[in-house]
Length: 367
Image 1 (cartoon, one colour):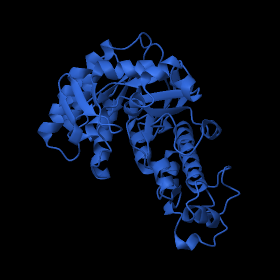
Image 2: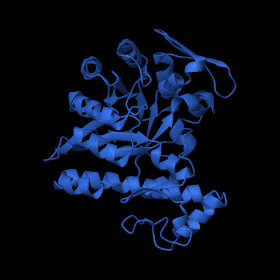
Image 3: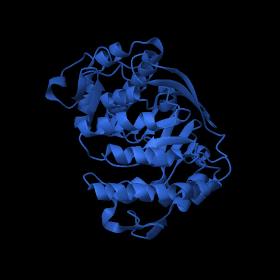
């Protein structure tokens, strides 16, 4: 079991704990560290898979909760899995659905067996257990399935964080027992902002033969200054011979910090969601493309961040598209942000290999 996913460590940064590696998956090899655009419904909003391929992305994230409700995992399985259904033939990771269900706190009930919740689409009742989550992800036929865990909210008491962690530990072997042959499953470390709980959780989860390990419960609303120590403390506790994934973290500075702590994989809605709210990432920081100062600007937002899909379009034109409510506006901003993130990850990989980490940190200090 689990031979479908293999992590290969190629080298470690001389300045930090950053790792350069490769993740071998059934749908190709992914150079690490890497970023996964979020394709909740099996689609990265406003862009097509040809766009993602052109930008060089090798893996995306899709959402178990949403896809199980619509179009339904049975239908996707009849198509031969999510790759066939969507036409994306590179890597796919699915989250367990737990995070979405936990965020429906008003309409869900959790106990040791699993979570009962109401669909946000039609109010129908559903039950998600470790076994059911892994079964759905098996039907989707993805490269990496995530274990069902309990993600405590922020803020929460130490007792609540400990309770969610203990339930996550109790569910870990149930996730593994439910997998299909050759279904790769990653385990998730919890423990809130408490370093002793994180250590306990890392040890407990690493004692199970997962195919990779994730840090969950970060980026759930806590301030960045609380996020950094958790990541720096927890990442080195995870097994060195498996991929390490920091779930839901995605500001460029946060990614650089986490890579320096030893993280290999990231996903976040920021580049795509912010684009739809007319925010674009540049080396000068995140800017509002609707700002009046761009009304007559023909020069790029940032001379050092001009990407092929956008070089013909001026900031003035893109601002006009947003003002006019034209769908091309969000699409162009999304392509820009995804290109910025693709380049960020490429430059991170080069800096680890080339020993130029301090230069990278300096280059992205405003981003």
